Image 1 (cartoon, rainbow, N blue to C red):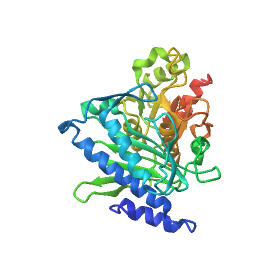
Image 2 (cartoon, rainbow, N blue to C red):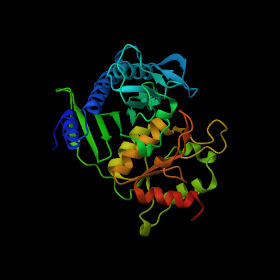
Image 3 (cartoon, rainbow, N blue to C red):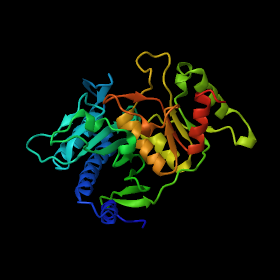
Image 4 (cartoon, one colour):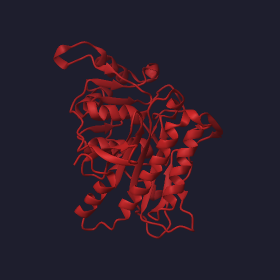
Length: 335
């Protein structure tokens, strides 16, 4: 029902599961509070001393912006106290984040990108927070790396918050995709997009064409194909690229199309692509498949990739099912 709060929605979903204990609902409730705090800071970022760099370099060898750092610590501090997590993993931290001994532990692990698209902060473009939730799979109270290194198909839930002209939350627990928009006057996320379905085919392609010379020949042929005129196949496609994964994905989820970040064949630092499997590709793949779309490395379904390390990178082709399947045909040399 449009206008329902996200908490009401979570409670209804909880009642539908006879085994639900409320722990998962409490976990997401705390994450929503953290996102509201981040949204507030994003909206006033130009008015306070929060833009710019901290001077720290993250695990990806990227300079960490102040707002990145704020978002990361907001989520960690809020979620650690929830009592529902056994550990966390963040794009900004090199290792698994343990829960302090002073707080109770739960059976979930949270993996997140605290502020995706942070290069857009200074120009007031859309940015977001991406999250993935898994159940603990190892015995004992303490989490191990194995609890984080699970295939995307094992996710309990995934979602993102997008901080744009409005703040939205989109999430799935494996039974449909739902979008909620933050109503500032109430301070509540209200259901605005019920049971989101991505079109089977779109008219948009999203890719950083500045990297064209770094792609292999088959990827270049696919992008060239999308730009060719052919009424029979409804081409050319329209190019749209914001430069923030969550923002580009969100647009294509609603309108259809394909987002691509291929491997950089000529860059030794990014031979497997730039995007992180666990905190970016897998959660968005879970969402898009629940909406009827598809996500691939070009050779393999993203949700079937076996993680080997916490900050593993993968190529990503994600969006409308027919578009991604077509991309696979080109990449694998079948067309």
